[in-house]
Length: 271
Ligand SMILES: C[S@@+](CC[C@H](N)C(=O)[O-])C[C@H]1O[C@@H](n2cnc3c(N)ncnc32)[C@H](O)[C@@H]1O
Image (cartoon, rainbow, N blue to C red):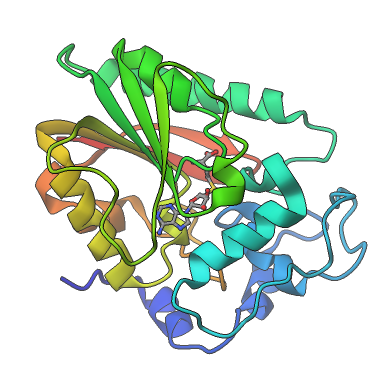
């Protein structure tokens, strides 16, 4: 299956470079970007001191080659991890003064109640796919009263994950199957991960792998950006409908919505 992108995105998908021209045009005058993962996708071409809340530790350009590699998305996240450390996983539209713990607390406050409302009491094992630094992995384990497996392709992020008896972290080799057995988990969870799968076939392959590792009748809960701004180099802002089409077997519906530094996030749930 090839996931259709909306027309504007389809045009952009054919472009060789980032569509920062479009991004700038659509940014509110004097305001903050509200696309995808905020400045995340635009870091390559950002101008020095163009914005008042630029992260002091953030380079003007991340050292990511614009060439296509075997895993351009993961390469970007690895470079971002090296540049930003544990803040790499949150939108750079959060002001520098916003404590990471506070941002994470807000994420917890939105996604954990949505997750709790979707559980049927039979779940014991959660996959935190694209877990990054494992900010929420232990919370996911606690939500099911069991354990959680965090999986991410970036070792630099996994190295920052806190150890806990209820969590385990595994490295994903991009392009390879997920490092889990068939039907190993009762819940698959993502938080701002799937928009980083830059090509429809990557999303389709990941959806297939999610289906393989999620036991029949298990819960799929995706908290993803549904910004309608055009795609840029590192982020494809898909709609809730796009995700529903990518996981037709899960019968996804929007269970909650929240705003993350100007970025609209939909929590999609289904089985
Ligand atoms: C915005 S961060 C979110 C991390 C984490 N979910 C959180 O909220 O803290 C996106 C994450 O997706 C990971 N990622 C990139 N490519 C991936 C892939 N193909 N499969 C799974 N995760 C991927 C990145 O390494 C990064 O940790």
